[in-house]
Image 1: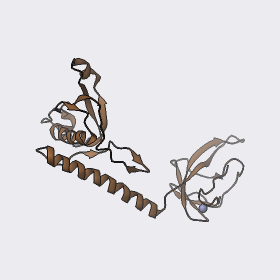
Image 2 (image 1 turned 90 degrees about the horizontal axis):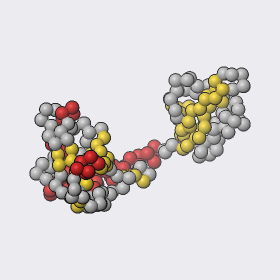
Image 3 (image 1 turned 180 degrees about the vertical axis):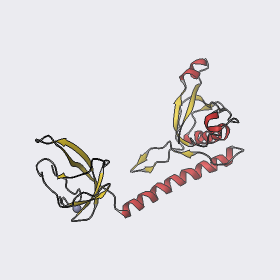
Length: 220
Ligand SMILES: [Zn+2]
């Protein structure tokens, strides 16, 4: 299969990134569009259609041809968003993200002494790369506690432990508030992206009251 523009089906393209491919080399129309690439190219490469000028990305692939030498080709072309589409997508992302951040800020103001917003909320699903607000959804069913050990490596000598009060069916918003408080106490200002929770089996098994102990999953 030769590489064709996903927008207009033209097989005429030029390379945009990451290296300059030769525009007019089209060799094997049965199996691959054969082009000369430097082996240092990283996948995928970005191409611009010579006809409709839309950009698309294609994976780089290598194979050995009959004469035994290695050949590079492209496959699985997929259309890249236009500048307008990218701008609209990043606007939609920011709006959704900022709306959730504002909710968390209001929650901190209402429920915590220290309202300094340290956490970056990342425990959401995305649809077309737009974050879906799940803050009001239950994050953990049943009675639970969120806990964190001191972290001198990232938080220094004055890093403290954190333990939430006993929670029942906490929402993601509540957990974001505790994640914020946890960062304040452990002083780990590197891992501030709250991505989810993990059951701490060891601590949970130590208890006989059915309360599950969870840890925050934090990214940097
Ligand atoms: Zn095209």
